Length: 226
Image 1 (cartoon, rainbow, N blue to C red):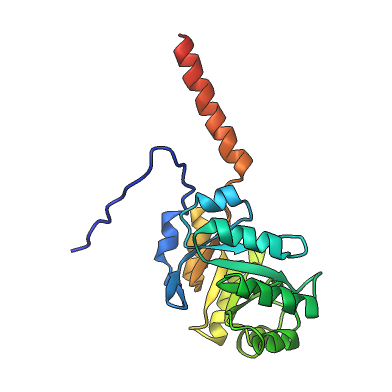
Image 2: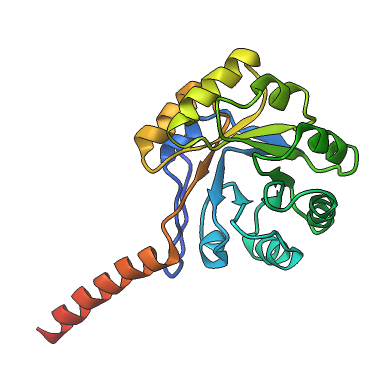
């Protein structure tokens, strides 16, 4: 008999919840903790009020220890920290990755342009799992997956995400794969069926959440005036 999980919620906290279908994935166990869902955000207010298993903190700026430490401090959950590999490259990425590890990041995330040789070198320096991002079918997928030294592949291929996952699964049916779930439950289910082990969820922005809240407040106020 399947047991129902009791639920207890605060009256004051508004929790951003990942879609329930994400829990159909197998998950990836990292240092004893199983990760099924990762929230893709650097907004500390959203991160602190989201029920995802972990945070994937990748952003379009040069990674800094200040940002990484702030996210780790507020998240209360494991952080997969972006450390560069695209615009930011070379020894600077190595230092950022080592700093992220020493400040408590569960794993480090490298951008797609990162050279295979660099990933191999980084794997000899840090102890944290390395997550290597793949964005295109044109990449040498077998090399990236099996020979780069990465521990996890992060697929972020836009409309080609499902096709990339399927291609990777033909190479290795068991290698850990995180994938971007897309904007709907339908797209999330598609990447799960393709073989993703964990899903990255993009939450509504702080502004979108606040807009909905303000609309509710306006309705409440208009009722009070009547």
